[in-house]
Image 1 (cartoon, one colour):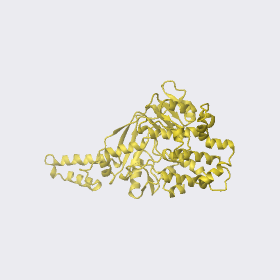
Image 2 (image 1 turned 45 degrees about the vertical axis):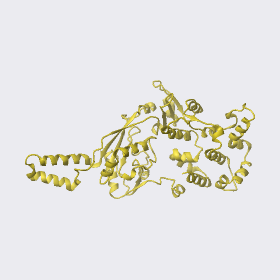
Image 3 (image 1 turned 60 degrees about the vertical axis):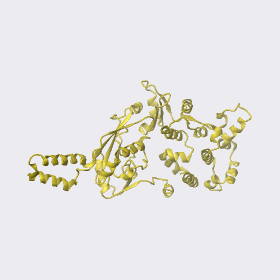
Image 4 (image 1 turned 135 degrees about the horizontal axis):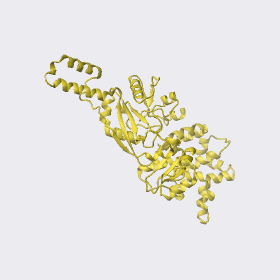
Length: 411
């Protein structure tokens, strides 16, 4: 990952945590029912997740009490607008935007000397079977301050009212109570410390529960797409829900998504795009074996690209140039069908969200598409960073250099 870090493509927007902030973060962990970290320095993302603590715990979901009970931590106003690097749901970043939009002023005040624990409650104690994810409707976001500072504020206010009533202003006991509270917690009278729960509405989304599930519920029919094969097998036994269930590898899935106007692919248009060139070069890279030149140079140079393209076997050449061969022959005869000349993974990779979709759905469908056929390195980086990082480590070093240059030039 050093190459990606040097190019600012690997968790480059994390917030460093040290000193007193570590103590506050640990107080949040205790409040949420987790063990404190032993680390003295670490970093966090927009939702309060730390890669260093995840590595320490050997658990990427260390802020979750099971799949149905995720949590977050706000320890700094700098978390506003920061990425959520390993979201449990595709809407996690939107939830954080909603929180800061609703309570930015209060967050700025509270995090001066306190921290906020987040509870994302969808009124589900635990998931028992895969289709329990359909219970997601709205998420109740509740807030809790470490050391119950909001409750201490109310105690101060009650003391002040008691001090003002009757002749209590001469009661030295009340004087002492007020002074001790102020010394320990400061003057809390004008602080904005109360954060009432707020509701976040969900529609179509992705969750990492059950190995990864896409829930598409805003279309002609509700469609559920599983990444994990065992969860898919369990889900298709269900007869109580009127939904369409697919595994991500099923070719019928793409047919259904096209029929429901969720995705589309016009080869005559897409072949003219940079995305097509990226995908074609990825397909070509997969066909290259021993080369006399670095992969990066082959993919970047038209002369070298054509030279090596003419050296690979005919079957491989057709896998790389299948789309162009198909379009060329289609001009002479409509007897040809796409599957006759274009490999399925190449064709699937060329799809895009349907032009009629709302913006709120497009990112989710892009994420689904890059999971169906991860052939576009740029879109894989944009829409599924964890999968991108996993694949990146297995790629040829020179191909890694081409990937970094490609992403850097398109950001």
